[in-house]
Image (tube, rainbow, N blue to C red; front, side, top):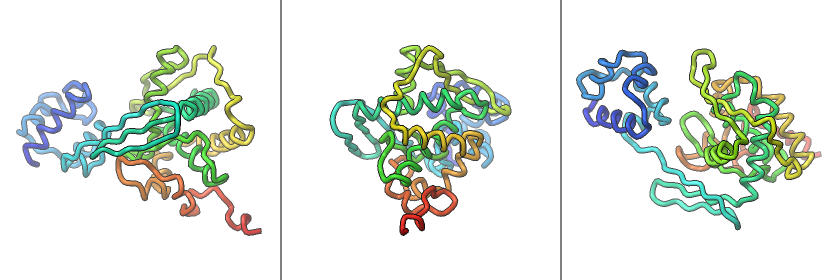
Length: 265
């Protein structure tokens, strides 16, 4: 391994606010051994590289080659939804009504299945993704209008972090760090006194969400991630870039939810 990689590890650790002890524990080595890594005095194994890439939210290829993750900024505003790329950065402008509908769907999902031990942040990302993209395939119209970004572990809803932070600040949501089968997990709990405005959802939309949760909410994060990795929208997107809703019409049978033969009748 080249010395620049070890310097990059240190920079990524500091940028993410991780301690040496934390990283050492996560990749299952001692702190003195980890310090040797940062100094370039010890070789990095492939297993350790995979774990580090996971910790920093990068693909193994990008981690080893030093490619920086795409920066993404989400701005809530009135008006039409626009996307603008600047070099490797993405700026996404989200109409206020899109945000409110996404927030309602998120709150509804959390009230229904958020208490299940398998539903942490990663599983939640995938549930929201399949709810939105399956709805588009079925009805050829958007449910929340959310933008999903391709990352190493599957589709990520771009506005998720900002919406949950706002909800947390308003005491509508609590975020808790837990363990699920010895793995770190971030869970989201809706305040029992907070009731989402379901008037923004149609009966058809609620029925669809319920069906998706019945089908998928018992799967763990790994199973949901694997399923999303088999889906055409994720496969065809560039890493760090938005997924195309239109690509659902090219899905394989394993992930398709629409009966196209019935459409011909």
